[in-house]
Amino acid sequence: MAFGKNLLSKIATNDGHGENSPYFDGWKAYDSDPFHLTENPQGVIQMGLAENQLCFDLIQEWILQNPKASICSAEGVNDFKDIAIFQDYHGLPEFREAIATFMAKVRGDTVTFDPDRVVMSGGATGAHETMAFCLANPGDAFLVPTPYYPGFDRDLRWRTGVKLLPVVCESSNNFMITREALEEAYQKAEESNINVKGLLITNPSNPLGTILDRDTLQGLVNFINEKNIHLICDEIYAATVFTRPMYVSIAEILEEDKKCNRDLIHLVYSLSKDMGFPGFRIGIIYSYNDKVVNSARKMSSFGLVSTQTQQLIANMLSDDSFINKYISESRKRLAARHGVFTRGLMQVRVGNLQSNAGLFFWMDLRRLLKESTVEAEMDLWRVIINEVKLNVSPGSSFHCSEPGWFRVCYANMDDETMRIALRRIKKFVLQADEREAAAKKHMWHKNLQLSLSFRRWDESIMKTPRIVTPHLMSPHMIMSPHSPLASPLVRARN
Image 1 (cartoon, helix red, strand yellow):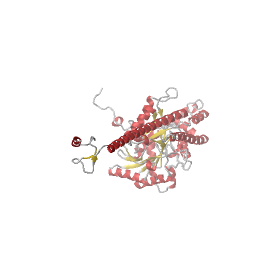
Image 2 (tube, one colour):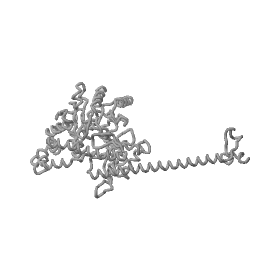
Image 3 (cartoon, helix red, strand yellow):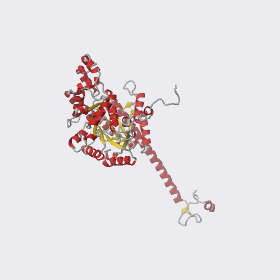
Image 4 (tube, one colour):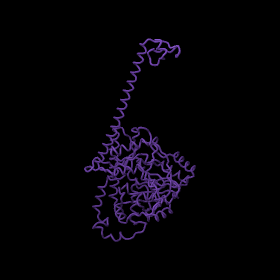
């Protein structure tokens, strides 16, 4: 055995994966003590994982009704050989066609997508890393509005050597991206001699659950065109928008803005959130830049989607009747679940950022902090994890500049688990309020006793014979000879 020599690479041994974040620590706490309705009812409820499990019954129903869609069924086994043998990295034509059609459908058919620009990847994780490899060199940077998904620190940075620079957004304007914040971040990069290659946005936002309006998107397009940098738009939550205002894709802006340099615009998409298929690892790169499409397709050899999965998904997404029903029902169920949680928390005076998309909401627990610091936020988070037994993600793990915000995922559980989770949160907040009220009452009584004590002392002063202290006091000051504040000389004279 060799000693004193590192046998692994620098990439393998560095901490760029970001696994030491509280975001991932919450998952570990859940894994060590997972909640189960009957087997472990006191365990940790997973509310830190953005999964969409609300419409699995519709998926399962479709699979039972379409057994030929899979080569792993008696009805579909005749296609086994054709699907199991080698396929190139372009992907099955029917798969790319179905993906392009589905991407248009979830965006309200306001735009169209070219199947020849659809590039496969191993989930959105692989898609983001591929984009970083295509667009930037080690040491280059992407601007990212805060708060942002913690996984970006892994996806874009770990193996590429690319930097992520925060564009600080604040609650005072509902964390909207402003031109001022963009310019400030860009200027700081220039002053530090960091080469900015692009801007990365998520729309709808993870973790905020909000969408970017048309004016904001147009402003971002104007900004990247002026700076001649790329714009990567993560739109993996496009079909989770459940109430108005309705979703606007960056693709719509390009349709309207004919002056924009389309070579600078790239989309990342996935079926992990909209369809609830994270295990299938279906990531998509869609670029308007021919060179990026060609380069990304070559790189996709390292993270392809299996042909078995491609065939099943192509069949499912091509069923217009089913997809229309699924999208509609998914939005209804997301809206209902979001409403139950947010209305329930309002009953105990817990607010959240107003949102209409995603699989989570941005909960405001700032009033429960002992002080407005990251340390206080982490103390509160540990109590929620270890005592309340809920895995919610602290805002600092999303690079939020304001302590006290938490992301709460609500679509990855059944109705009964949801009710238990809500009861736990409400009970915890009510107990915190009671402790605060008790502390204030104790302080009020203490102040009252102190006030009464001073009043009695004042009254004793008024009833006690008074004497002038000529040597130690001015002629205008009066003091009792029995007072502990009187000098020995004064007391001796009496």
